[in-house]
Image 1 (cartoon, one colour):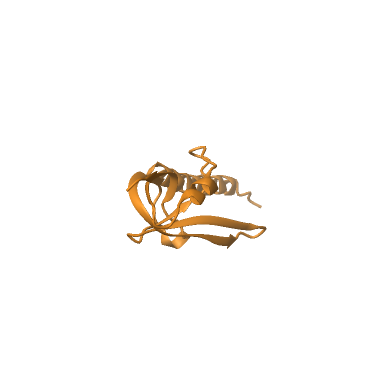
Image 2 (image 1 turned 120 degrees about the vertical axis):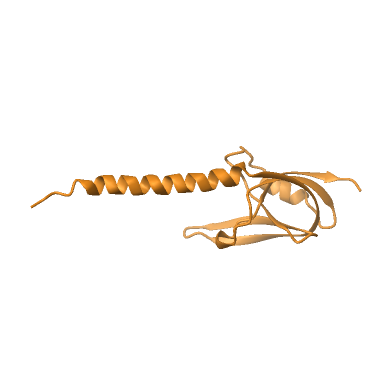
Length: 120
């Protein structure tokens, strides 16, 4: 009977390819930064069930129709998403810094990590 020593290497190679793909996707999203001045049209939360628990995401829609999410970021050491979201009021204008991009198949949106109210 012949032993298949290649199966271990194939599994490691497969895991390596997946890790590179995931790392590239996350890195590209985190490294893609932008800045905009937006007028907030609407704010709301979206709730997801993730198996063992519930995840809530804060969302903001601009008057131009763009949707942004506000979530914590380990990459930016930013854990103030609820504070940022709570300060954003419909009808008000903000200078926002964001990263990421809209990816419909994963329901992800550009992520606001900084918001400053702009006086009119």
